[in-house]
Length: 82
Image (cartoon, rainbow, N blue to C red; front, side, top):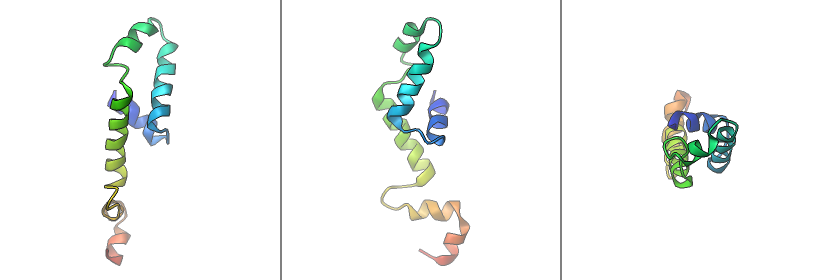
């Protein structure tokens, strides 16, 4: 399930919109109500918010010090110094 939401986030979708999109896709399936009630296939809002926070930290670094992640992603920043 994490991979599905990480793909949503990689496509520029925020946490709330990702959850709505995920639920909308499930509603198109057979036995949709059972799937929606299944916590392993449909996370709660708090779980999606946590996944989004984790994804942001992995992709953009710490909110208090984003320069470290920029240096990691682009070595030319390291040449300029901190």
